Image 1 (tube, helix red, strand yellow):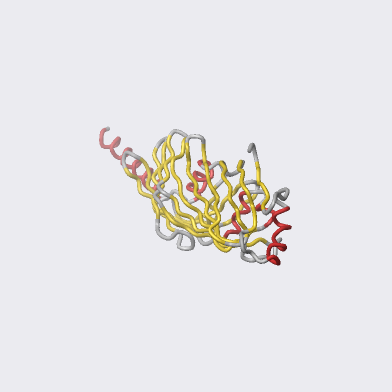
Image 2 (cartoon, one colour):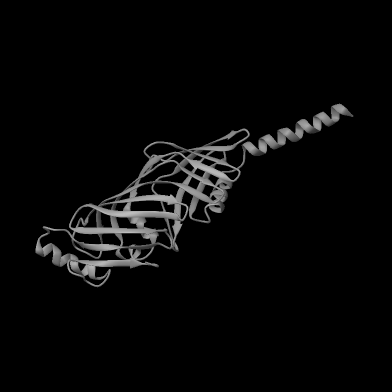
Length: 250
């Protein structure tokens, strides 16, 4: 009786081990979709839960876009805390990063990435109408999720901004500093250089609320200024050499 039970248990353990090893990569895709509420998508997932790759997409404000290249992962089970994912994306990430997932919490290493600014249309109006171009450089400090709250921050550089609806190119370079606080995401936009001056403070992303000003930098030639004013006046009423911007509850 005992040897038969041992054989059954060994067979069951072997079946479970083989099943776990062969879990398809789309299980990761379903998990990411569920945990991010559909904001992050893994398309064309290949391989297994433990080692695979996929096209990473972002969905926000009713718009979905695929990011360049493919993101690859290697999964390790760290007993008893949870799973560690090493994430590699040669097209966007400057170096591999590690994501640690445990019951009720998760953490992400600091990292650096770059992407085309065209992805900014995911932020919704007015960016989805002016269709910006340029380059995004993103740095983030370690980010942690615990009991539904997020801690972390970083810097986004917007380099060589231009928009399809205005002939002045480039409009400038800008920096966004962002931080997750108890009340949610807060951020500040400042201008580094360029004829178009943008300065704002706000909070949130999909339902962003912010206030600030858009104007023309000092010393800009009059001909350039005249070409910029239609863009500024589309943002708000003119007040001197700038226009106020108020979106949301501000």
